[in-house]
Amino acid sequence: MNIFITGASSGIGEALAYEYAKRASLSTNENNASGSLSSTGLHGIPCNIGLVGRRIDMLQKLAQNLQQQYQIQTAIYAVDVRDKTALANAADDFINRYGAPNIVIASAGVSRGTLTEYFEDIAAFQAVFDINVMGMVHTFQPFIESMKEVSQAGQPAQLVGVASVAGIRGLPGSGAYSASKAAAITYLESLRVEMQHFNIHVSTIAPGYIRTPMTDINTYKMPFLMDTNVFAHKFANAVAKRKRFTVIPWQMGVVARMLRFIPPFLWDWAMKKAPRKKRLD
Ligand SMILES: NC(=O)c1ccc[n+]([C@@H]2O[C@H](COP(=O)([O-])OP(=O)(O)OC[C@H]3O[C@@H](n4cnc5c(N)ncnc54)[C@H](OP(=O)(O)O)[C@@H]3O)[C@@H](O)[C@H]2O)c1
Image (cartoon, rainbow, N blue to C red; front, side):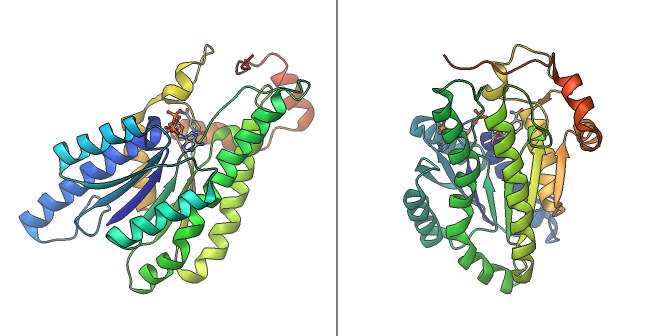
């Protein structure tokens, strides 16, 4: 089983690397014990994981821990997801080392408080869109050709995008982030339909509030806040079930369904006093 994860140096991506490593080692033990199909959602061993982020020191530490705790092979790539050539090179290297991935997870993302009335926030809008939307495209594109072969050979082939509940409606003070996640949700839906001809599954995972460095700085109340390890477990289960679109935690899924039906005038009224993410001055 080969897995490639962006945003692996922190938060959700890092927790997913641990979760899949743990599942791989469980899968090894189960297979050794019974010879039966694994219940972990990982149908083959060994497990090799590609880890992407800009902070190489964090990736090195993670790779070392995965090797020591779970005997997992990793390849680390200190790459900015805005750089399509660097990601294509990373993909080539990963495929040369281990073969095509079975699961590619695009988790790299940034959240910034933005207000359109400030000229200096245009740069933040650009960065958020480039990382959260184009970064996802740059991550998936170089793997698709090789994953077609994987799926033809009857192996699992899955592209997983990390969106957000913030992409369901436009949140005040988070125009860039909300719009980027709305774009990600819509992009992933197009991709899901395109990829079905090749039997490559596309899953959109929309987290609610998860305890990571991204949310640690929020001063407002975050309903149904979930720990990363719990989230990663549920995430991997959703991926194993080939969910098309899922919100985690489920309580935020209920909220997200309701949000879709609120008429614009009611939304405007309800959001007037909503807490806002702080802008960087
Ligand atoms: N936490 C939540 O409550 C929550 C809710 C909804 C959605 N999400 C989404 O979940 C994803 C992960 O967020 P998180 O909460 O885990 O935040 P995090 O702890 O801040 O992690 C963000 C990750 O993205 C990477 N990243 C950011 N910019 C990058 C770039 N230009 N190139 C390469 N990697 C980059 C970071 O690595 P480097 O800094 O090393 O590059 C880091 O590994 C994001 O897409 C976020 O929007 C999170």
